[in-house]
Image 1 (cartoon, rainbow, N blue to C red):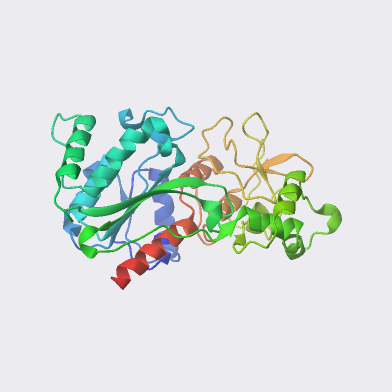
Image 2 (cartoon, one colour):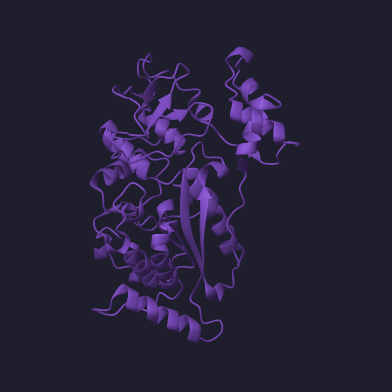
Length: 369
């Protein structure tokens, strides 16, 4: 959705998970925001050939399943059968797009995965150097490294940038750290760098503790303002107003939604879910900070970290609609199915606006070229 908002028109959408496809079909049938999308291909990407798109598409994008690299998973990386990075590389090799963007979890930056990350990056730079039958990934890496060292000048197929970002730094009301691989076909001669952050924690502290604009905007009186000792200490060190916009908070995202415990349920996907409780490592999100990273619902009790801390210290689960707001989904995107299933999809998603920020920059460079 973020990539579509940036100006690209999707010609193929592939998704393995049945319930995710059901939601795509539901929203496509309802029109906006998926009105121009093709029907999703439901199935294994290993069964797809991208050769019909060779040289005909501007962008290949995706999120190869990240469980092999997740901080909450078994950390098996390339030894995990769910590792779909080889398929991401194959999509680039067969479609030969002008650019690509792939998103993954912060866990990919762990030192233990550094060699495999180098392997992924080299495959994306030289996708035509294909892994041979019965060749180990490490032997393939060695061959790619030899090719890189001995290659002729300007023989690189794609210029690749691997970088880490925090969604909160781009106006997303959630502290969600992710990594991205972005590449442009070398013959286009495009030089690209990641978009600069537009929001900051310092600007939020200034808005809360120095000029009170955050509290004034939400019409919160001085007696109810939750300026923590830490925020006050950091605010004291700021000698000038930061140039960035303030981080967006959970309150910014959901302030206009009724309390789901009291509401009669007139807002779509905004139903109260009982049973939330805190336990070590899962304490919920503060209202006046960006939310913690939404999880996919398999960490401890269902929903794990996907809770709001009320002003009295009690917790409740985020509703589906609140979680969608934290992931910057538009309100007219609907979720069908159970709370657990919908939260799993949301926890696995890329924030729509974050994808849009990166995709708009890619779009601009392709159009300029």
